[in-house]
Image 1 (tube, rainbow, N blue to C red):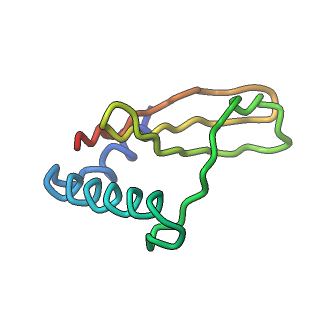
Image 2: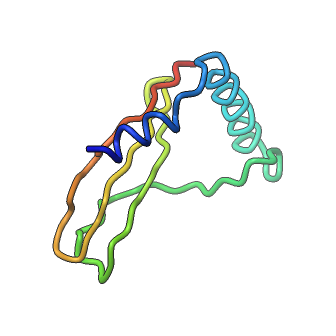
Length: 97
Protein backbone atom coordinates (compact mmCIF):
# COMPACT_ATOMS: atom_id res chain seq x y z
CA UNK A 1 0.00 0.00 0.00
CA UNK A 2 2.93 2.35 -0.59
CA UNK A 3 0.94 4.13 -3.30
CA UNK A 4 -1.67 5.09 -0.70
CA UNK A 5 0.96 6.57 1.59
CA UNK A 6 2.51 8.46 -1.33
CA UNK A 7 -0.89 9.87 -2.32
CA UNK A 8 -1.68 10.79 1.28
CA UNK A 9 1.62 12.69 1.50
CA UNK A 10 0.90 14.50 -1.79
CA UNK A 11 -2.51 15.55 -0.42
CA UNK A 12 -1.00 16.95 2.76
CA UNK A 13 -2.35 20.47 2.38
CA UNK A 14 -3.32 22.71 5.31
CA UNK A 15 -7.03 22.43 6.11
CA UNK A 16 -7.47 26.21 5.81
CA UNK A 17 -6.22 26.15 2.22
CA UNK A 18 -8.45 23.17 1.35
CA UNK A 19 -11.47 25.03 2.74
CA UNK A 20 -10.56 28.09 0.63
CA UNK A 21 -10.42 25.91 -2.48
CA UNK A 22 -13.74 24.25 -1.59
CA UNK A 23 -15.40 27.63 -1.01
CA UNK A 24 -14.09 29.04 -4.30
CA UNK A 25 -15.30 25.94 -6.18
CA UNK A 26 -18.72 26.19 -4.52
CA UNK A 27 -19.10 29.84 -5.50
CA UNK A 28 -18.10 29.07 -9.09
CA UNK A 29 -20.44 26.06 -9.30
CA UNK A 30 -23.42 28.06 -8.04
CA UNK A 31 -22.61 30.87 -10.48
CA UNK A 32 -22.36 28.40 -13.36
CA UNK A 33 -25.66 26.75 -12.47
CA UNK A 34 -27.40 30.12 -12.07
CA UNK A 35 -26.70 31.27 -15.62
CA UNK A 36 -25.11 30.09 -18.84
CA UNK A 37 -21.50 31.30 -18.90
CA UNK A 38 -21.74 32.62 -15.34
CA UNK A 39 -18.69 30.71 -14.13
CA UNK A 40 -15.04 30.40 -15.06
CA UNK A 41 -15.20 26.78 -13.90
CA UNK A 42 -15.97 24.44 -16.80
CA UNK A 43 -18.89 22.18 -15.90
CA UNK A 44 -20.97 19.55 -17.63
CA UNK A 45 -24.35 18.79 -16.13
CA UNK A 46 -24.32 15.01 -16.00
CA UNK A 47 -24.78 11.99 -13.81
CA UNK A 48 -23.12 8.60 -13.52
CA UNK A 49 -25.55 5.72 -13.94
CA UNK A 50 -23.03 2.87 -13.68
CA UNK A 51 -19.41 2.18 -12.76
CA UNK A 52 -16.77 0.86 -15.15
CA UNK A 53 -16.98 -2.90 -15.61
CA UNK A 54 -13.25 -3.53 -15.35
CA UNK A 55 -13.17 -5.02 -18.84
CA UNK A 56 -11.05 -2.34 -20.50
CA UNK A 57 -8.11 -3.29 -22.70
CA UNK A 58 -5.54 -1.61 -20.49
CA UNK A 59 -4.78 -0.40 -17.01
CA UNK A 60 -6.34 2.91 -16.03
CA UNK A 61 -6.89 4.96 -12.92
CA UNK A 62 -10.06 6.99 -12.44
CA UNK A 63 -10.72 9.91 -10.12
CA UNK A 64 -13.95 11.69 -9.34
CA UNK A 65 -14.91 14.60 -7.12
CA UNK A 66 -18.38 14.26 -5.59
CA UNK A 67 -20.24 16.87 -3.56
CA UNK A 68 -22.48 15.10 -1.08
CA UNK A 69 -24.10 16.41 2.09
CA UNK A 70 -22.06 19.65 1.97
CA UNK A 71 -18.78 17.73 1.72
CA UNK A 72 -16.47 16.99 -1.16
CA UNK A 73 -15.33 13.37 -1.53
CA UNK A 74 -12.42 12.33 -3.73
CA UNK A 75 -12.82 8.77 -5.01
CA UNK A 76 -10.20 6.71 -6.81
CA UNK A 77 -10.46 3.31 -8.40
CA UNK A 78 -8.07 1.27 -10.51
CA UNK A 79 -9.36 -0.66 -13.48
CA UNK A 80 -7.48 -3.49 -15.19
CA UNK A 81 -8.20 -5.69 -18.16
CA UNK A 82 -9.56 -8.56 -16.08
CA UNK A 83 -11.30 -6.80 -13.15
CA UNK A 84 -11.13 -4.01 -10.63
CA UNK A 85 -8.10 -4.18 -8.39
CA UNK A 86 -9.82 -1.77 -6.06
CA UNK A 87 -13.04 0.21 -5.93
CA UNK A 88 -13.23 3.46 -4.01
CA UNK A 89 -9.64 2.85 -3.02
CA UNK A 90 -9.17 6.14 -1.26
CA UNK A 91 -11.10 9.03 0.14
CA UNK A 92 -8.38 11.64 0.24
CA UNK A 93 -10.10 14.41 2.17
CA UNK A 94 -13.54 15.50 3.26
CA UNK A 95 -13.93 19.22 2.77
CA UNK A 96 -16.82 20.43 4.89
CA UNK A 97 -18.26 23.69 3.68
